[in-house]
Length: 404
Image 1 (cartoon, one colour):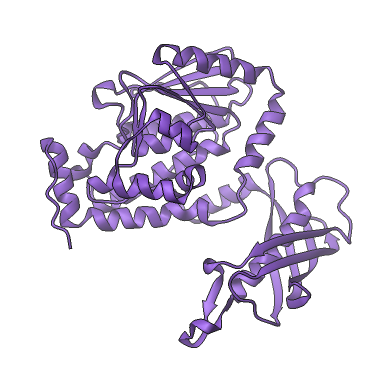
Image 2 (spheres, one colour):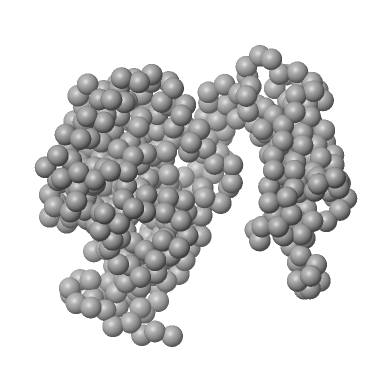
């Protein structure tokens, strides 16, 4: 923890009460109010804001005690403010007086204690407590770069060029590629000095056709669930890497391949590139990536892509904010290298801090939404329409869905 924290330090957080924060009492919609758990969360998060300027890299604050009185109600659409004031400092335990207000009306008050912890220690403890629930190992991997079969990785002048290398399968992500991407991400996490920028592209005429549908019939439902959660965690890990990731989208980026592209920090596409979330045409919803897509293009456009499943052209992707820049295909790698070189000329720690802060998300939902995505995907995967979708994909024919 950095020096300078004193009693009296304050933090404040403002929310607008929405449908995810309320409870309806007695079954009467007129009695829909800001819920007590969310009231407590608001005040806890205000305390976290007070501590944020005093955290070192790799530290976080966690709540360890709370005593709150809920004094008044607030309806949907109300602007509520959480306020926290440091009252005592006991080593790495920080005590707060907390309040929640709606205008000049006090909604709740009480006390709260937070502890400053090392994030890596927390991760290690969770792994120890729940060894069977670790769906992927993305802990930093020191040592030499692993050997890959489905990836080509070259490193030159602190720029790593990563090529998805299953061109005959349009670079579809199978189980092996998932594991190798996990290894690569873990290795990159441990080598921020050796590699500062990563260029991600695909071999052949596609960037990535998505998850390998041909493997699905061979997987049990639990294996399919685990694989989906691993892939979701993998792409979310892109934003935690110390390197700047740039996708060079040379062709189709569909499904999981589209998620891989928009999970990077910057995206350059060739004019021939197309983007799609076509899972519904196979009989299931996307297993992950919906929150990230909605954050990039907005709700209406995310619905259009995911409900219809149709590809959009590179020009439309540029207009929607799904990509940052378009170039001719022959210039794609050169433009990526030039952009990477310009990033190398900027201060490394400032870039890492900027990336971390922009990706930082105070709301829990965007970081856990993939769990609901995967649940819906697995549920639909067991229905007849999904089986028909898989069969039609294998037979290269249009599916004949049963409907309701």
